[in-house]
Length: 309
Image (cartoon, rainbow, N blue to C red; front, side, top):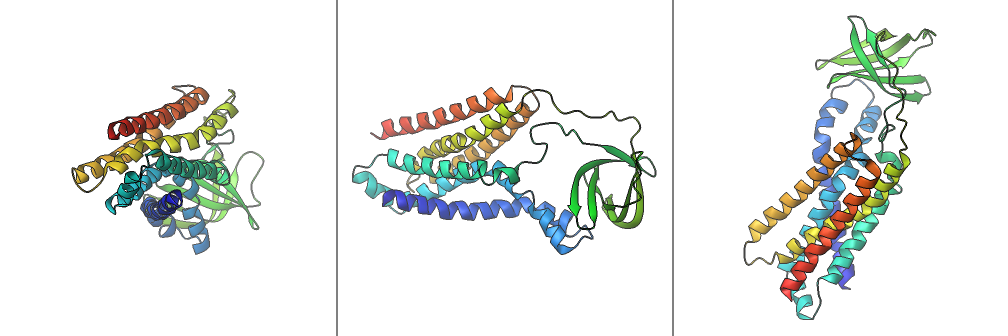
């Protein structure tokens, strides 16, 4: 009964916080993908929602930590935890509920949602990346190709906000020149449509080759370590959440817990970037990081339990 109530409360707060964080992350995309392009509404909505699984993969640790904070602080403030504690319950049943929920979330993200959350070149250099030039020597980098009933629809980028999109026409030649039709481009915030446009391969950009080192151990280490990271972060947040009883330093504890969650997100993203950049070997690093986070979470829980006893 106790664990069922905790898991139900975790589910409610996790769903609510996921919706809030998702809405915040999509605000910038609404102006860029919904309002600033002349595509159909279905295409705009599809492009807006496409990065959601990847965003969830990055935000899930923070959302989970905040869910643990909201769940156990709410149960503590309502007096339920005090009753359970008086009945002789320790913190370990709460830790089991938190670990079980983190494990389920982690398996969901590395299982069914994993293919959607990873771009094609998530762990390797893009082997088919190409740079083209248009009139005025404007360089465009080919981002991805989408096959449609009308043909291949190409999307290219130039700078941060400049986008070129069009349908590959039958006029494309064998010398690398690509002709686009029925397209549009965004340059310096201005949307312009075109009927035909020629893209010539950049004459000085060397062909990119895929990385030659073995990538599957890093991919496997990241996927296996992700649920462990969630469990460790949940256990790390649990002692703070259990200490919020509405009596002393409540606001300070809540503020500290929120800062802990946000800093955990920053550290995870920063270490991910450093590992992808080759600062450390990805496979051992992701495995070691997961083990350290779990150990720190367990240590924090043991210390707070000994102090309470």
